[in-house]
Image (tube, rainbow, N blue to C red; front, side, top):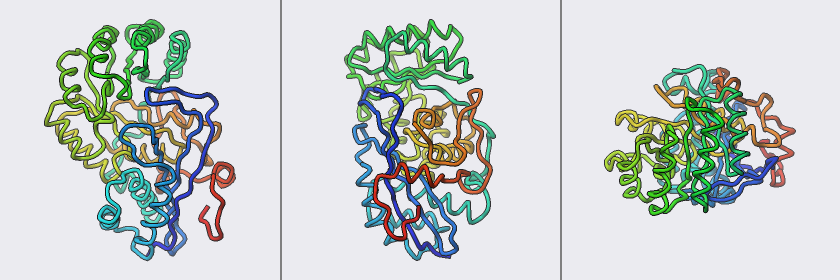
Length: 377
């Protein structure tokens, strides 16, 4: 048993409407698929979702493709794909801290191993604890009327939480937006707010006590990812629990957040952590310190959603999360049976590997390179 082919392929899918977040606007999602095939013809795949203008993501589509195709593939060709830990350690020693790229390789290896064994990936991770996962709905910057209407729609669809993006250049408008959403969904619906590290500490210390009045379930990453001092001070001032996202990329980051008492919860994403193996370490550490885990994802197709669901279903007590949402924001998906939330829940797939099948026609439409002779897709 040996790896015989490995390839990273970029693709792009337009979104029906442009979305604005604290760190920029998104109209086209540019991601990468990583394929690994063994000498029996079995294949694993994963999705990498770099956002270069997001703090903490120093990788791009181009850098992921180059690293996989030019550096990592030659390291792994001919190796046993089931030796996941040894292969990942070899990659780390040769190419260093490039978590998005390593995530693509790691999760494609898990998909391949699940397909080889004929079991879903969650069986390789200790087994499923949840057959379904509760989903939240995230609302990007819009007018307060539009945000309120979208929040009301999300509640009718059965989403368990409503996430409101804040951290804009107009903090007073952020307060009005949260107030409008709270009025639209009523006093008992759980909401939470996400600044995407968009505030300075000075803005945050004035704005967040006002937002706190609307009883958000969580306040997510109000200040820069590196500003743990700011996170600690805000946590002491606010009634609502504080959640770290950009502040936690690695196991070492999680250790420091716990040591400093900088957060009550952590938002996880496989890509930013380096894939399933590293995410397991972070989740175990967080749970040992009674840090809540929020299931997150960068904007991905059902390929990325499936991988995250396989991982999150193995955790004991995840909160509702927005790991599903990217598939509802694209003009088309890349799999034959897209994953979508139904009544606010995502069903975890139980077929081998990650459980999804690539739609070759849709992928051919989305890929942005020229397929080479012998290309795997």
